Length: 348
Image (tube, rainbow, N blue to C red; front, side, top):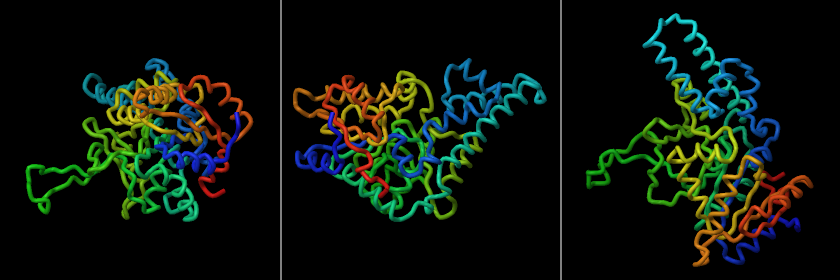
């Protein structure tokens, strides 16, 4: 299969007036800084905690879904308050395990990011925005499986307001006919689309998205504190980010289908049209659920022609090329490859 230049691929698709979607994986963040955005770092830190109680919990629950484990530890601690002595040795162990897991996650989050948004150079922000722009105009879409907040930072710093992640301020007095007297919530809640179409989708959740049991909320940066500080505060208050952290494709899909926000994002991926460009996404053994979504999009609307026609996969190395060639038969649409370095996402 021919390795193409990214600019040539994009020009060809624009010439065909194709609807465009972008799928990004960890390679997007690693292209910015491969030392701090290491692959599967959140899962790696769990192993490195080397906590026997946590290891046993993961074995019993048969999952490394951090959100679920932390919630269950918190509930178990509360149950022990009701049914046992507050000095009970078991509760002491549970609290220790909960503390170790939460602190480990906080430490990993900090290690996986620049200190704050203003540490990212302006020229990199501008270059990255130029790469993202074709997928945020018209009928474009961006899908990302990254948990980190690098993409959020880029969009915030670029000053571009055409992206819509589905979050908005909820109208608290909808019965009021006078718009000047409308009262809005102070928290960004998913589902408040502000009259626009959602075109930004965190397929596996993200560190700044939280499920309060009723709504999905988004934590945002303001002039008071940096975003990472707000995320840490939420976790200190037993609120945990929404993200799919472990498992094979089926396990990930199961987690996705049990969360209204993640399910919506995944279903949107299942219905994209035109062509999909995959950057920094290697379609590995745990990504079968993503391939399923792409194939559903390729099958969707085939009679009317409103379907996904092709996927363009970015490759960095000869190993990447061999891998894409080995899995090309899994896709129900045309597969092409481009040299990921020619996309120059961060200007390097």
